[in-house]
Every structure is written in structure tokens, then in C-alpha cells.
Image (cartoon, rainbow, N blue to C red; front, side, top):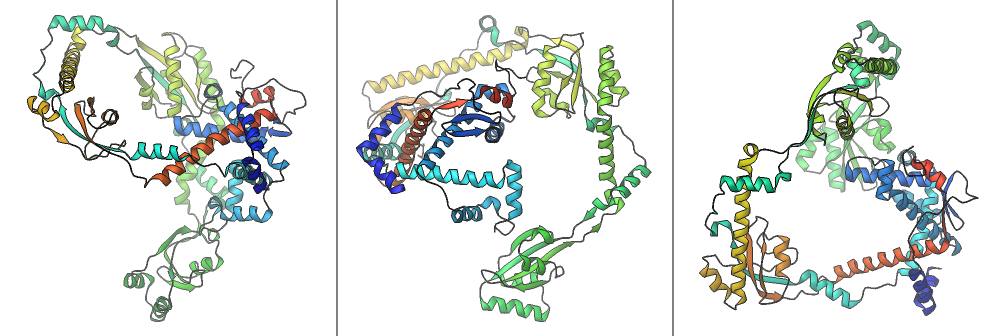
Length: 627
């Protein structure tokens, strides 16, 4: 079947069909609610359905990916602005269209192939790297998939892969493109250059007081204070309530007796092993057993590498022989057992005995759990009481004292960074609190800010400092330094322009350097990555590659100085990297054509979206606002 696909793709008919698919691309949009789609279906493309489970799983994955990049999980509105829902449906629809095409061609994966993929997947490996059914079930639960859904996804992935290989395997990168890319990446330039810095000029004139005042007037918008607000902040959380709870020894002891069965430690052992790959090594360890020599002593004598398997319970070791050996020897002792790569010497370096955890060891944990339980039980009552006191315009300081809650005074700007002093406010909640503080009016009752189900924040505004123009006394010294820096930059740029203009008259590069008392240097061969034995900025590299032999110019370096250069030699790149370039270009071409193909296939098949279900899943109303 794959050979047939390849043959079709190479014929003029196949090319015409491909051209129509590519030309037929259109923008992806969301159509209206359609009839015939149930509440468990987000979209339909042809006869294939995208279920709510599939969408939620893919949408959650994209939200988590966005959170890793930005540090916070996007809200529904933010996700819409970022185009995440459309991108998820776009990808799922493309996969569904390819799956339908694969079914029509009779593509799929055999049970034997699925079993092989399962066994070879490192995500499902156990302690020793072999397949672990426990890990398999655990990861399926974490991803919200059933075994049937997992294997169906593998079959669908196999179909898509076979289509891609069948149609596009023959695509090759043009030789001309390879040569151009290779030359671009491997050509080198050798430059003669000298550095022009502020040290090559006389110091600029110091600005007068009148000039500084005029500068401030002209640039007053850049010299304004940041608006700040001083507030008292109080946080109610189970942890804050628990901190004020005191328990008697009898209460803790009674809880220990009630939950004693859960305070049992399982014996663990630090297991290590050595593979004995020869009869000589095996005999060495056998003699050690006969003479009573320890595992560590033999390792020190032999210098053999030891594999540390970690601190494990017996149930965690999936190799029955290894588990039996590890839990039948004492510390420092060892036992020889067979293995796939040869006899193994198994030893234990540390044993942590199991059994009932004593009350003294469990006291702190039990006490914390009891306090947290009492705190959660009383949270709603305390929350209601605080809201009543706030409605009665009682100050936050009085409420904090009554309920033994911390009251933190902060002076903050709109970015909310100063709220890091309130350790009970999570980092991703600081901006919300800052927005609320800057939206509140001084002297009025501020609203409660809820950060999750069990974390509420209240605050009182103590003072407001609006943004204002800074005075000359406040910023005069800073302006003086700024003006001096700007004058140095301007005079330095003028000097460099004059030097480059001199080079333009045809004077030799070395003579220009000598006449300006500048040190002439030569780089090692430079490529576009900058390798040349000197630290050049991307601007210098780009300028140097702007022409061939004899090309000259200037550009600013990473330290702020100018590099004036003259290209003294151009070396064409070799063809040694052509194969690496071939892979890059070919993969880029394949990605582009494949994307165009599946986009055209998706649009030809026809995509219908159930907006009502989608809005419910995203928790937004018809106008895109959070519900």
C-alpha cells in the first residue's frame, strides 16, 4: 500500500492532485453550531468526531506548555487571545482528517507492532529499565486515558506516519539550495580592524546648570516618580488559621492511636550491584564469600564500576531474583545471582528497618495534620465572620489581631513585586492583589480578593503617592551623567564617520589606523557565528559579511566601542557540511509541504465546530467573556 502511495505521488496525476490541495488552502475558522452533533462532541471533520475528552486533554497540555513559558497558567481570555483553542482544534482536525484518509487506504498497526512499541517506550520503564505495568497504568491515569484510548492513539499515529512516508518520502532538497545554504553557513571572512573608543577622544564639555535644566524640561516625561501605595495586607488561609491553633498532648496522642495503622514504615535497602562479565571476576567474588571478605573490600581491590540502584522497598524491585538477594543479606554483605549479561554481585550498603513509627517520631506530623484539619473545618465560619466585620467597617488591623492573622504593611508599585514580603500570597497571585490595591479608593471599603477556594486577601489603603514630575534637585546629577554619555556617543559616532569617509577616499587601511593613532589588528577567519578569536557583536559580523574582499565599514561592538574593519580575505566554504545542510533543508521542505497537505486535506474534508460545547468547555460566554 505504501509503495502504491509513493507511485501515485510520483505520477503527473498525483502531482496535479497535490497542486490542487496546496492551492485550495484557506484560513481556518470556526463555523456556527450545527445540528447532529451531541454534547460530547466538540467538532466533526467528515465522518470523524473530536470528542470533549480529546479536546480537554489536548487543551490542558497546551495550557501547561504555555505556563512553562510564561510562569502562569493562562486564563480563558488569555488563552483565546493567544489562539490556543483554535490551534488545538486545528491540530486535532488535521489528525482526524489524516486518520480518515488512513482508514480509507486500510492503514493501521498490528497487535504485535503495538506490543513492541509499548515494551520499548522508556516512559513505561521500571527501576531496571524493563516494561512496568504499574508505571503504564499510573501514566495513563495521569493523562486521563484508558488503555483502549492509548492503543487507538498509537494506531492513529501509525496511520499518519505511514501516509507521510508513503507520499513524501521521495522529496529531495535541490542541489542548488544545498550549495547556497552551505556557502552561507561555511564562508569565512578575515578582517583587518581597529577599535575606536571614548579613550581616543578628548572628554566632552561638562553641561552647565542651565543646559541641565533645559534637558529636564525637554525630557520631563522620562523623569517622573512611579505611583505607589502603602497598604496593610491580611491573608486568610488554612495555614494561617493552623498557626494559631494549640493542641494538647492528649489530643495528639489520641489521634496517633486512632491512625496508628497508617504510621508504619516499610523496610528499605540501598541496593547496588556489579556485573561479573568474566569467570575470573566471578571466581574473585566467590573466594570473597569463602573468606568472609566484604563487598566494599573487593570493589576497592578490583576497581570495578558499581551500579547504585537506590533506596528501594522489596515491592519496588521488579526482578524477583534481585529482590530476594537484596533482602536476604546484611549491610556490606553480598550474594551472587544470574543475570542477562552475566553473573551479578548484589550488595546492600544501608538498611532502614521497617515497623511501627514511634509516637515521638510521628508527633509533629500528626499535630500538623490535626491543626490543618481543624483549620479547614473552621475556614468558612471564620471567613463569614471576617466579612461581617469588614462590612461593619472594622479595620483590618483589629481583625488580624482577633484571629491571630499576620498583618503585613507594604509600599508597592503597580507591578506588585513588593508583595513578596507577604509570603502567604503565591507568586502568581501578586499581580491580582496589586491590581485590586491600585483600583481601590483611599478611605473606602476594599473588596475581598479570592486566590483559590481556601485563600482570601483583605487590605486597607494607608496612603497614596501619585506619579509626579521629579525636580532638578532630585535628578540633576543623573541628568548630568546622561548628558555626558550622550555627548560621548555623539562625538564618537562623528569620529567614526570621519574615519570611514577617509577610507572611502581610497587611503590604505593601515595608513588610516596609523594617522589616528589606532592599533591595527587582524582577526582569525570569521564565520557568521562569529568564530574568529575576538568578541564581535552580531552587528559587526553582519557588517563584515556585507561585501567581499576590500569591503570596509564600521559597527558597534558589545562593549559600546566601534569596530572599523576592512575585509582582507574571503574563503569559500567547503562541501564537508553539505550532508548536514541536506538534512536541514530536506526536513524544512518536508515540514512545509506536509503542513500544506494536511491543511488542504482538512479544508477539503470540511470542519464543523459545536460552538456551544466549546464555549462551555472554555467557560466563556458568547462574547468571549469568562462566565
